[in-house]
Image 1: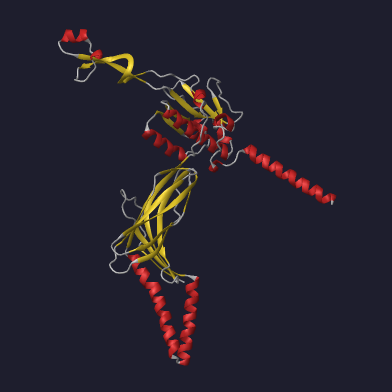
Image 2 (image 1 turned 30 degrees about the vertical axis):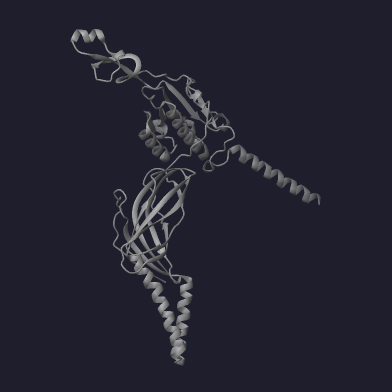
Length: 419
């Protein structure tokens, strides 16, 4: 038994900044305990009217009063609430994200008690990989009129992808637990669950640096190399060593020499087309490995690019925080599915160094570039470090467990037959 009232349907709109969510629905639900309470109240009413006993009339009045207080008092407090969600835009797979729900009470008289906040299931994204985000429930014990309060909960990122949050619900069963009153707010948000970060071997970058282009000079930027770039007017504070004395004497004013900026070493991390037919776990290992390797290489001064054109993805060469965040967001959505029209991608421009990531048996077709076997964890995983739980156990360990289970069953069967 539930009373339901909702506003007219409206399209989703993205709030600007930390705007308050839009109230879209409220709901009253009679709980099983409340249904039993109402049935007992009816029996008391029948007994009171049949016997005309004043004590039964008094009990009936108290029971009806409890229903009114439970259904109306706390429900009126909910109608004065406004809510919003504050969530991160990016979280690593296997880790936890802190989601904050802030409520404001616009009422004047009735406070709100025992508020429970939970996220409602949202629609899947129109494109991209759908991630898995398991969120807990937030609690707010008391919210007086004219005040604000916040409730926080941890959401566990279980699978790489993108998650869209649409609506969250604020509910209470205060004071007697007979009715469950709830109000729903709509606030659109998107969270990118990035690939899990791996702890790589210290000497793995040496494999990447094999045959690497050591970089050149930037023709459009000045820096601290030995190559001459140009002349400019002297500015107080310039080192006297940079003054071009002969040229200054010729034109009658001080000018200083500028030098070209060195270009960092460049490398492309290529995902081998053979990964298209690999298992789901191998694909996830490849994406996690290329993500961790690109982040480590960028931290060591490399200009990194990622290429999987056969799967419809190519990240340009470069470094910096903005490109790294964009690359993480793109890698959270990538699907390693072969596209027949893109099986022979052109080499990425300005990249002489290239490292191929593939599974066992799939090497570099030309043989000119180093190859990292994704399935050989000992070749790239740091010693004594286990894989994140979201990537699952290795295929070899699963095979050993299965073989061990089969031997145990055979031993039990043999002992039973001997008995």
